[in-house]
Length: 138
Image (tube, rainbow, N blue to C red):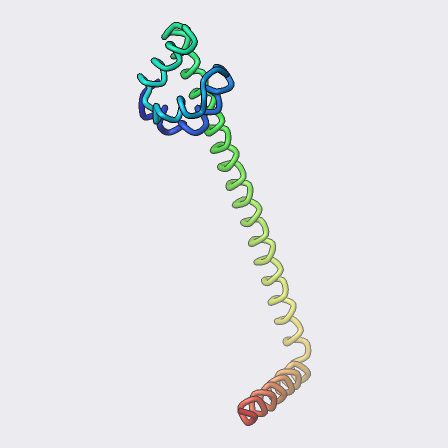
């Protein structure tokens, strides 16, 4: 365990220290401000435990925290990959549907050109009237 790891996990470790050594107060633990030497010294003074035992506790506690972070990171990556795959699948489906609709429209226009032209004219006329009325009301 190094000082940087201890500082990075300090808030989580304070709780674990209090669980392991219940006779330490929050004030005592907080006063060490994550300084490894001070924490180990405090625990030795208050409990009489050996430095090796205390350091082994910190190694276990920080490696467990690191493994949790690693698992969360891996889960997030898996989820992002899954979302990406699903999004790609839906995009492909939408593209296929649009392509199919375009082909159906082409076929309809080829079979019924006069009706298609009439529909387009009617839609254009109605759109023009609506836009004209909207602009006129302003």
